[in-house]
Amino acid sequence: MKLFDLSGKTAIVTGANTGLGQGIAEALAAAGADIAAVGRTPPADTQKAVEALGRRFLSISADLSSMEPIGRVVAETLAAFGGIDILVNNAGIIRRNDALDFTEDDWDAVMDVNLKTTFFLTQAVGRQMVAQGRGGKIINVASMLSYQGGIRVASYTASKSGLAGVTKLLANEWAAKGINVNAIAPGYFETNNTEALRADEGRSRDILARIPAGRWGSPTDLGGAAVFLASAASDYVHGTLLPVDGGWLAR
Ligand code: NAP
Image 1 (cartoon, rainbow, N blue to C red):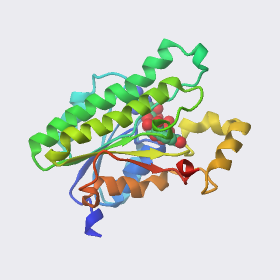
Image 2 (cartoon, rainbow, N blue to C red):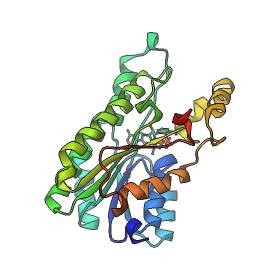
Image 3 (tube, rainbow, N blue to C red):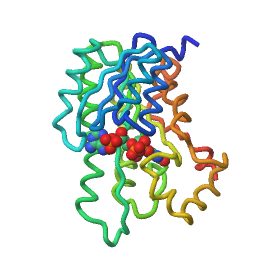
Image 4 (tube, rainbow, N blue to C red):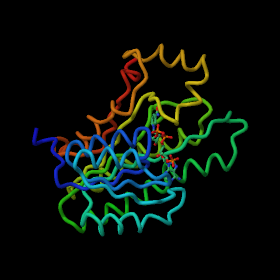
């Protein structure tokens, strides 16, 4: 079990107030990590759950649609915990429209949060990890649309396909520095992100019919993959996308 022990580690998790980020933060805390939660909505429930597990919790208020908070996120985490061992880039948005009608705003908004800020936050944390000299773990939250095209989500597909590429690039550059850069690719999970899909009876039925596990995922289903990629158990795993999808990609 020591392979999966995160005692004494500090993890930054973006978008940890709800959904998959909340599930990931709680799983890392259960494995022993202290949590710095970064986002725009106060993560009250996550804080309660993490502290109930006996771990320390820091809330960093930040809108990740711009580069502005990046320096602060690193500085506030260091001030509270003294180092950074794990970064989970989970915060993300989606905009739905036909490709023929897709707007520049829907393109830029999604690319800024899902790809641009994610890259530059990772760069800032990577610099810190290199300076600390004890390696680190970066986990990007990718998507089935890192593999597939999707429908009516042009900028989301671009961002998540781009994130898959950047995950591999960073792994190539940082593996020899002891920093593992990998991604989790969730299938279809019950969160705010998929509310519109689940409300559409036809799409919802078609999606469920294709999932071999026979159910949508719940945020707790991601915990094992997150702890694996955050822990010593994955020390020789670099640049991979780990699907957690109830078998979706196997169909
Ligand atoms: P969610 O419930 O909508 O959570 C998204 C999180 O990102 C929230 O914490 C949200 O904060 C945060 N966020 C969005 N924009 C932000 C900004 N500008 N600044 C700071 N935080 C921001 O959806 P989710 O499903 O858990 O999504 C988490 C990640 O999983 C996303 O990257 C998503 O693309 C990915 N994903 C989800 C699924 C799925 O089936 N649900 C599948 C594949 C991948 P607020 O609450 O303040 O908006």
